[in-house]
Image 1 (cartoon, rainbow, N blue to C red):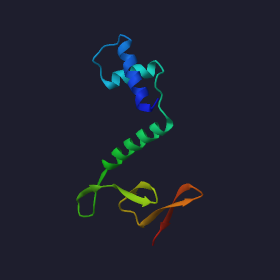
Image 2: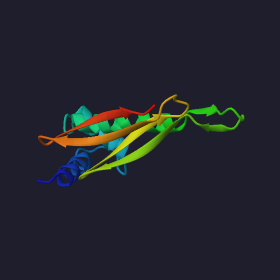
Image 3: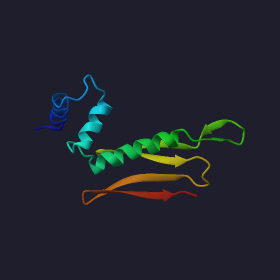
Length: 116
């Protein structure tokens, strides 16, 4: 059974349990979690936290020396091999940095080279 099949089964179990119908997905999700039919995977929690962090960082603004309102942090996409990575940079840093993605022994690691 695939993951989507499992989710559809949870929705069908919800309907069959005598719960109010129609229902929102949030209501079904709450019921599924309370009945231990669904548990978050660590990767899902990390993804959710990362999405919320990105949203918050996009909403942070500062004023530049000319008094203009600008974003304090910017996302930069790095393309390395088969993986894409979004790196966040802060404006106003004294040094520019170039981040590169290296692949060694099948493990990706981020290294930073700082330019003067």
